[in-house]
Amino acid sequence: MNEFDVVIIGGGVSGCCTFYTLTEYSDIKKVAIIEKETKLAQISSSHKANSQTIHDGSIETNYSPEKAKKVKLSAQKVRNFCLKENLQNKVIYSMQKMAIGVGDHECEVMTKRHEEFQYIFPGLKFYTKEAIKSMEPKVIEGKDGGDRPENVVGSGFDSDWCAVNYEALSEYFIQKAKEKNPQNEVFLGFRVNKIEPKNAGYAVIGADGREIYAKFVLVDAGSYSLPLAQRAGYGLDLGCLPVGGEFYFAPNLLKGKVYGVQNPKLPFAALHGDPDVFVEGKTRLGPTALATLRLENSRHFFDVLSPELLKLDLHLDVMKVTYDLLSDSEIRNYILRNIFFHLPFFGKRLFIKDAQKIIPSLKLEDITFAKGYGEVRPQVVDRTAKKLELGEKKIRTGKGMTFNMTPSPGATSCLQNAMVDSEEIVAFLNAKFDKERFLKELSPEELQ
Ligand SMILES: Cc1cc2nc3c(=O)[nH]c(=O)nc-3n(C[C@H](O)[C@H](O)[C@H](O)COP(=O)(O)OP(=O)(O)OC[C@H]3O[C@@H](n4cnc5c(N)ncnc54)[C@H](O)[C@@H]3O)c2cc1C
Image (tube, rainbow, N blue to C red; front, side, top):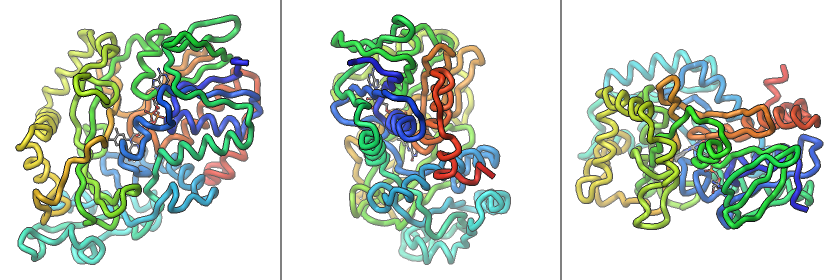
């Protein structure tokens, strides 16, 4: 009864999406998904955890044109899926979005970038200070009520399906898959402790001793994918630098997403502002970026260190990578600034200075710390190459077990990753995946 062709560990958006993709587009008979929490998508894919953005590369100024072309294809799969399923205003939301440059240097950078990127994103619009004033008045309104003194230009879209509640999307993937094949199972409240070879496949063993068997195991356990891989003897050359991200709430001050010019040395989006798609009437500002010792945000006050992290990171190579990062003055200042953001009294006063780049008239009393919001981004450290990986990481064992580590923009890439993993799984199991239908429905551009 507890025997499956494929077991997916982790019920975040990555796992739920592959559960759906295999059910809908492959001929694999029995798939299970295992989640340690009692509800799906409560960690990074929760509506509280992430920035609710489909990152397609059009306004993410730290993406090169090559990276933008790639993420655009991932993004359009999520967008097309939601529109095909009529999930407008339930899972996916439309709003204006722009990246802004503030001051002469950033305006020059934005202008150049816009010219380069408008060929990748037809319809991408350039906004002057006047145009931004009519679209997002609060971005131009200065502290004294007049216009802010610096020049501001922007690049973006008047409207775009660019905001997603990834928690709702995860639940929808599971609902669709269960409707299609009720034999496929969802196990909640099941914390996987280890994966061991058994017969021709694997035994997935829970912390409470329960066992589930699979021919192929896909691990989409977020921050815990790497500890699970290392327990199974893989990814031993990798470490993890967990970076926590938190948010502040302000009243409804922005109509759409406003991103700033980002530092290309940093693997995640810089501070931005946008309307929360779940909490009505609130603008969200953030995320901050604080190096932490936890693999997931703790639900307990005294729980400040994930013991698994010691095993991952107590290596000279990881310390060397951290030392090298800190030797770069831009990164060091960024990290220090983010540490200060978390100090009582001073933190909020410092944070508001960064947020005022987006909304200059923002006052201290306008913002409140969004308690319980945000999560940890598990950035992978490659100990052999002695560098921080800027993005996702996959460990393929070639033996019926694959591990995914999916920091930002992992939610945007869920269908792309599901397609790649499904292809690998069917090849291993000698099954079929209808890639043509998958692409026809979700990314027809790739078929041409
Ligand atoms: C502050 C912040 C902002 C972000 N903003 C964006 C954004 O705007 N757009 C975007 O695309 N991405 C964004 N991201 C990244 C995005 O949230 C993640 O890439 C994505 O949610 C990862 O999904 P996942 O399913 O791989 O991991 P998760 O959602 O973390 O799911 C992993 C699941 O595995 C479960 N699990 C872990 N260990 C075990 C175990 N031993 N047994 C059973 N289950 C286990 C966990 O409980 C969890 O449910 C952001 C992330 C952060 C932290």
